[in-house]
Image 1 (cartoon, helix red, strand yellow):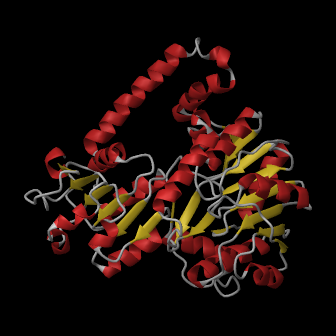
Image 2 (cartoon, one colour):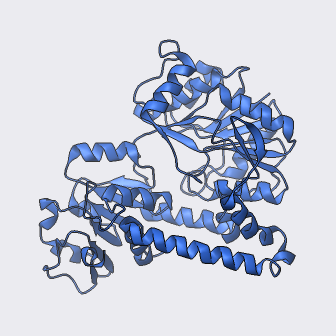
Image 3 (cartoon, helix red, strand yellow):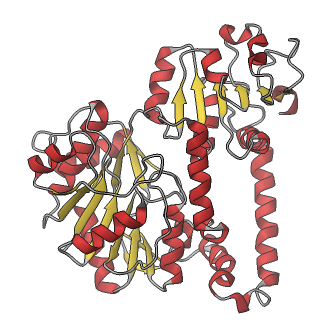
Length: 439
């Protein structure tokens, strides 16, 4: 019925634990799908033998080692024993309702892309389905201790019939934007895009982020490259561009103003002749969005801070965040370092973070996703950054920032949310912004 395929990181430490948990959940689906694991990272061959998976070690990669999406999907479709395939991230646990969703979608549509938002939960140890209450135990645990990502979100699984994709750009896996392109391309091909978020609990196991070996600026360049491959139009697509939704009531066409506004937005992308007739409704929608954005900005200082940071970043820029606990947040919203990090990372903006409280750093390691690094000092945190945000009034951050002048050719921006450095003499190449005064 189904072939699941994935790539894996090395099976070391906690990463190995959660990948084995994910694979174990796939093998328990009934009927059991064919499972293909690509790549030759440490432990992959051994895990394939242990779980009875198909192992394909050869896979084309980018210059920085990220698997190339077209080679991955072409080999999967050529090797699969079944005509329906699912690419899933190797840290995602699936349960029985996933196959039930697939049955409902495939019976209704011959050409489809099945996607859905994930649930995030911290699972630190091997999950034993036999002693933890099986799928019901996992579902109860995630319902109590996890949460589903907010809409529209992105999907960590993509289920489709063999042959749907004909020309996938040279995306690097794990570098963003290709998931947007899949939604766009399925819509362009006239396939049903089914959002199963209300029906499927796809469990993402929170994990520490490994240091990117080529540096965060290189990671940002790879993200930018994926964006250029996707194109500006495709990069705007998300789960709000689904054509159908599956929930407890069944499979139905999407309804609601948010979906309708996106449908009007995107029609000219597929039908350029409609650009002129839709000019007035598109302008009206854009005006409403401006108003809503203004309201959000007026009540949420975190949004304003993130916008300021992004406006100051160069194309391959990195943001340093000093302090991950609470900071002054103005009227409503939150400008905490942690929330700023999450917001920037969701947009693909690399972050390096530091907090002198080891417990806060430990929570951050499991709460935020890449591209991120964690420093062991103030100096190490800010050394490679283009924008430095002082998000917490820690004594350690009150030390003289004279060391910032170590790199005299690098222009930097310091955004001070706590008034820590406002009386410090700074290098002429440093732009100082007292955010507390602007909030």
